[in-house]
Image (tube, rainbow, N blue to C red; front, side):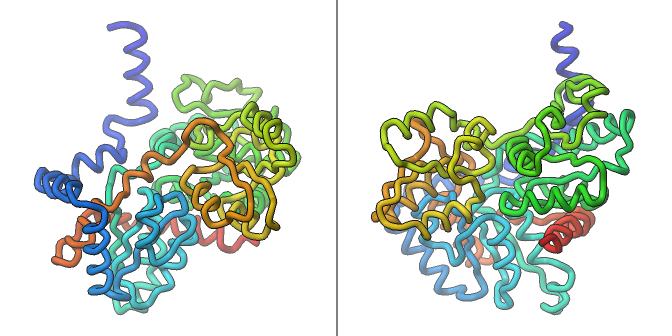
Length: 405
């Protein structure tokens, strides 16, 4: 066996474990041959027929059904959503519904997990006399490349390695909401917290009130851009590579000198935006303003006129006067929707390359129709059910976030 292969096997066992639970594994386990055959038939239907059949189920089930549509979802799916927003806002709104019995989340896997955790908060289940809300994901292959870059076994291994060099009692773990429930639970158990892109700064300040260092995962760019706002030097932010042999590829000195330890993860969409895209659009369109999501690399974020969460991007465009010119660095479906909704402004996509969330795009009309008609017929498919222990600790980390102002 070659040295390279031996190293790979070591990495897999040390950091991933013998059989990591990935979205791909979930799909393999959950999609039976009959389900695959049914979906193939749905994919032969015309959009008009699919729309009619989806509308019929929605009318039949009424308020007992809530369809959630994430901002990055394609327009034909968004049209059928009862609520539209970012992942956490959608989960919060759905959890407040008293009539809802089933949530169909047109998003990705971690979003459906969060919806299950919040909608089935013990207090809310008690208010419903013990009834849980079912959370369905139309396509289990709708994962998140960023979330998949940090497996719980990897994070636990990193934590153990850190503890050999620094006092992890003084390290506060912070996970971006774009992460698996197991990572949220890790933060809950270790005195940590969850953040969104809109409250990351307040959350990191909260963490520094309780510890000497922050361990931020899975998106290094949001962590770095936010820490820079807090005047933390990049030299104080080593990046932990889960596939490196020693201390995530860092020296003991770098870990000792750290204030924020970043995970080597990123959003595959926002990673695509480059400084040259900004320069090109400013040259082509004098007076244009650059509006980006903080998941973009620092080299782009530093050049932007405005950087903020999906909600801030939408609000910024909505509140700008006619004639404003924008180049927006976030997911393509959202940018195109803003362009269509605001013809009084000039809106451009920041990259010349098509950048859309490929896994989000897996949620389409055939999958949505298949999920709803199975529900109508008494068959619950693709249910997301976070186990009680993980849900309990995840909820603690989420509730800490809610308490941050």
